[in-house]
Picture 1 (cartoon, one colour):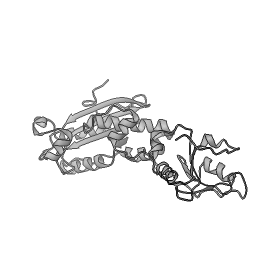
Picture 2 (cartoon, rainbow, N blue to C red):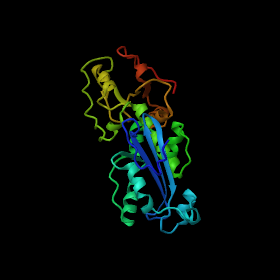
Picture 3 (cartoon, rainbow, N blue to C red):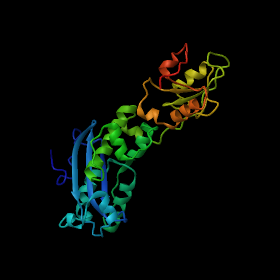
Picture 4 (tube, rainbow, N blue to C red):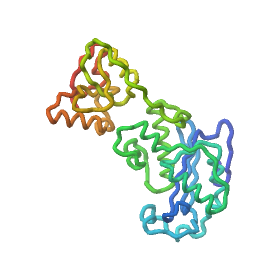
Length: 293
């Protein structure tokens, strides 16, 4: 593989990445004080190249930051400044889709370009936090370390290259999990429309049903409404059923979701709310059965 530190761009139709991922560590509270950069390129769901370097931030090191990433002044003696590596970083990111886990890295690069009097880096940014929140909405946290553990991604937190690699795999796994292509992630998420009106009669007449895992105007909601069920936006004390898209047994993200926990709480307090998978609805017969949750 060509050394990405020396070959800034080597794009051909067969070698250009689908997206690149960047992570930076900083020496102090000033976001311009970049002391490490990690970049990983991805193509067709696989890693294409990597680039990592320590950076002399030309700034002080704060003990708080050092405790997080372990980088100190002596680690960066003789290392390039951001001005020295600007062309390399720009070469990897410019004109591409660039992923970062939150927009801290975007702000740090912009600040470093200003401080070191270098041209801004023109790229299309994609926040992997937002992607993860949309792909796995019911996880209790979307921090990179927790996501890496949940998704089985090898990860050493607060190492720029490892963080960049992990964020890239979050994107790959989100695409695989949801079927949403990369270009679709760059668009604002579609806001769900109103819930469908329930049919005047049907086997679910009188039911107030919350859905987990699909929008309130999706195919499951339409099927339930066609049989008389009323779709509600959240689990409450009048909700009769929580229907979970897919099948049991339910994943960790479902069992730890707010909707699931509220339904379980109502059940412990003597409520009659049922928790069922869409498979257990057994459409069109709709024999609602309590799961073994």
